[in-house]
Image (cartoon, rainbow, N blue to C red):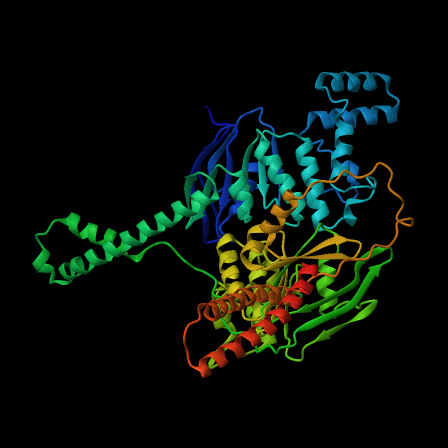
Length: 620
């Protein structure tokens, strides 16, 4: 099968930094390829070159002449005066959209000949239902006022609108740059299913590991300006990558052992090797290069201790918050426990970010109260990014916050030393903040959050713009973090690895506490019966206010689990004592009295714990 696109010896540099060199690959119809790499190695630039919006230093990109290409950049662009309806029509590359636009313009002008020609084109392209399908798609993606200006849309809404435009153009080749960024999980799952069913060829950059695993049939890694191809999904790529790294490290170790022997030979007096073969001298330098090991780890280092946190953490009592008719919280009550790791999920616009701002006192509540423990120290990673002066240098921004950073007891770092742990070399630390890439800004933001030794971390979409390797290190840090963690994220893999329960924000102030990670929640949704809604539903004003069931708090759930274990052990001990009494075993009076007293104690404890278990099971 012939390639629909061929890339040969593609090379790109920025200044003296080589992003990738001599990349050669071909894509055939139906290939679904994911590109993975660290931040700053040129993943987005690679897609831009293929899309034709960026030029390469050398090499060629050959595309089949009639190929329809759809490109989704990280930050979609729309005309400043565009409405949702007009922005959704891609009249640059879709001939059906062009025909619809031409027909509309002809009608407005009253030109009979132009109308006839436009009608003919719509007939030829079978595009009469194009607008109807467009409106259906926009409605399904949550767009109601189609004449509203695009300029007023949020980041997530702009991404959804760009997806509608892309899907409607029905491209044969999809170039997707971080397609899941700013999308809620429901939209991500829709896109995932759409791409899996699609016959289009896909080349995408994403850090969403479940997305890569479920959509892609080939993974390309860019590492040290070189590409590595793996047939299979992301899980297969991880196995092959581990094997490749192990083989490389073994080769480097072998080369170093051989180098020691050759070094002795090279160190002898020149006359001692005057008659030796020149190829051995050349081989020595080649061996020396191999022994250096060209693979650069460069992993971010997240270390440090959280400050001590007391027994009282945080308590919410009957908290209410609304903006006009939109209810964010309605009589919300909850008690946070030490070491709790909570994920927050819900559709875009339901109020997840508002919730954590209310929790920290950054926004006022309407009624109720927050009770904060005296030892709680928040560390807040906001999806809005850092509020530094963009004209400051990276190192100056950190020095302004502290010129001495305590990593853990007895270990202090200067700002320059601390920044190197977040992959900012001394040269990078002299960069101005406005020149940083998205990934670099995320790392700087994370550095400022962790340098203050928080014991209650609140992370709002921390996975945007971070590469997969950094995400894995952040996950490991959070799993071992001794304080409390709240995470808002659309990254299902990230949530599954970190959280022990979820707040599911369902809208209208309803917050459901679900005991499990996201995959547990997804399985729960798939397992419950879908009840068909009645044809006539009373209006919201007519509906009686439902009494919301009392839900088990995180602390109560832990108590419930402990009670089950305790009751199992106590009943076992009680059975053993009953067996002893029934055996008629001859024993001294003191032992018999002691066991009788213990039997009475156990019976009382079991009665007490069973009552508490029943009380909690009602909530469960």
